[in-house]
Length: 192
Image (tube, rainbow, N blue to C red):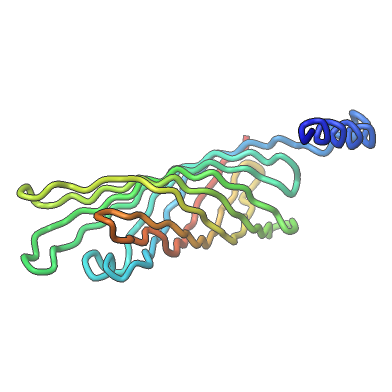
């Protein structure tokens, strides 16, 4: 019954628009980019071992569906070094994130194009210990919300200035580890 209701609603909505109106509503502008950010993890234990944060590198691909709506896929890499609290032996922590998101462009002027966004983050992480210990690796799913602005640089490029809040919790050894935090980044994107 639910599928029938959805089909009827879709048919009724499609009758309200001509093919030209529907074709004009979508623009399908593709973009590819790279970015550099600084990631501030929120977990207090993480901060004690690794410090307040480190650089995060990203590559992205996105598609503007309409003038207001964009879908985005992104790959992020974060790596930090720290020390064990007692023996001060070196540790390495890495996070690889694949995220899928959507952005809503609030308005567009010559140099301003602010947006709001949200999405889901698929996170894998690994902590490398000294040889006498076993390394820890696992994965979890989180989400993010973001705000940012595109600055046009000619016809084919723009800068993306972005502030993102990430919420993700993992549970290694039955203890909660907060992998989320704040990420501030700047990127450049090429428009196809």
